[in-house]
Image 1: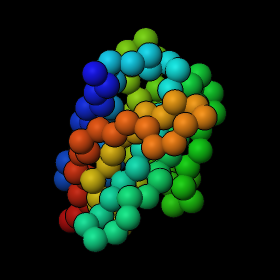
Image 2 (image 1 turned 90 degrees about the vertical axis):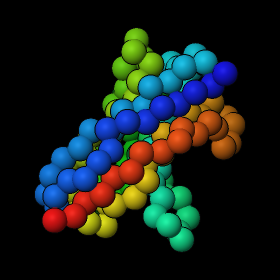
Image 3 (image 1 turned 60 degrees about the vertical axis):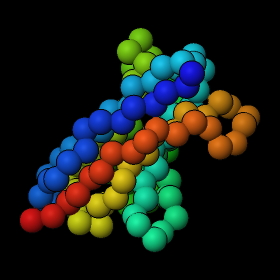
Image 4 (image 1 turned 120 degrees about the horizontal axis):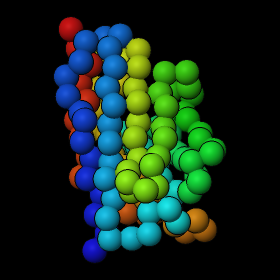
Length: 118
């Protein structure tokens, strides 16, 4: 079955960096758009970044531009989110999502906690 497993979260000081990974299985990874979302308790899940099936085109939410980079390795069936210059407001559970083009919703991972604090 479809499985997405996020890893790489943790506690980091403001200004620090983390690299999140999302390992996929159970579907043809290279056919899916991959996305990262995040969620803070009591708030809606919000879009962070997406990357197309080829890895050539990426989009980011405004606060992530210039700080976060999404990329993928289709051979390893993994998508990554490199996060630099982290801020306390980046604290959230980060979720990986796999979306087949032309559909909505997609498949979700279980999330990984990122805490930015001194």
